[in-house]
Image (cartoon, helix red, strand yellow):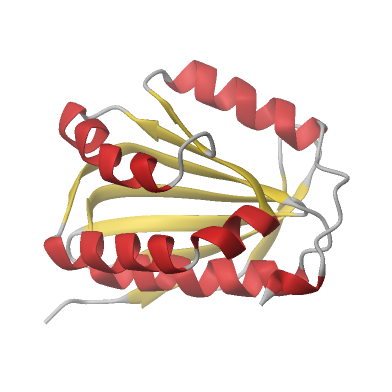
Length: 164
């Protein structure tokens, strides 16, 4: 039986002066944080991604979309992800495929840091779904610079009634 630990939303200030809140997840195989900025959703996941982590992220994503007024950016720090369970891949790819058009209307872009070659190659399946919308990074510094740049320059494009 997996041990699950759900944290609470804590409010903090980022290095670039943005207010954010964190929600935490942990099970036997992975741990993660979903960070909500005013116009950015960021994740940090370590270990082997599990179905529970994917469901946690999806819930956080939908809660974030519900309150978003402008298009936002998503940054996934998967630099310390060693792989994903088959169920995690299945759920994430199914959700991504089913929600692709909707997610494109509310998100400006998805940025993913991947340091594992195996995980980088597996991302090909996701990239084929979201060509031009997802950008993969192999170097942490480049990923962090882009994240900080977009935090300083959020989208001004208003989300329409299709937020669902």
